[in-house]
Length: 231
Ligand SMILES: *Cc1c(COP(=O)(O)O)cnc(C)c1O
Image (cartoon, rainbow, N blue to C red; front, side, top):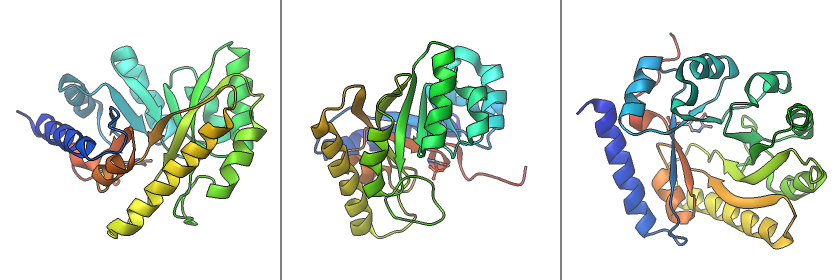
């Protein structure tokens, strides 16, 4: 078995293991994060069973989509510039990084002119880190309410990138805050807003995230090895 298949198998086993301890017991969708990796590497992963991939840069994303077409589902997981929405909105399965009104406006404008609905997650900066995108916890509900009449955007849930720390207690506290927020939004019963998806957990922390209730994880280096950004 190739390294990728082998790594993928291990990650999937760990996902299943973590699910046993998850409070929700929900199925977990694995997004293989393919940023910086070549097409051939991605094809290999697809042959091993990967069916959802995540990318964080629009240009890299579109060039890969041109080649891979409908072989796989696409997730935009990185900060999305408003002027680049036009390149991806028709092909992306889910945008994980909706975090501001100007971006929502642009997605709404494009989607409505194509008579389609674009699925999005609202990104939350749960660790309140200056370097990270996403809304602060207290900004999320006002933001959601401010775009309720954007009928061509379907909010499907929340996404976060947890702080890169080893402190398991702290990480669990972060993930728990996400669950509470999700429940609070559900409680409002907004028409057109679903909280089906909680996208949190990466190579370092996906087990903890799943135990706390994540049902979508974004895993890169555990599947593909360390990324080389110099290429
Ligand atoms: C790169 C990236 C990941 C995957 O990170 P790994 O640590 O390699 O698993 C997940 N989510 C986002 C938003 C990313 O940019």
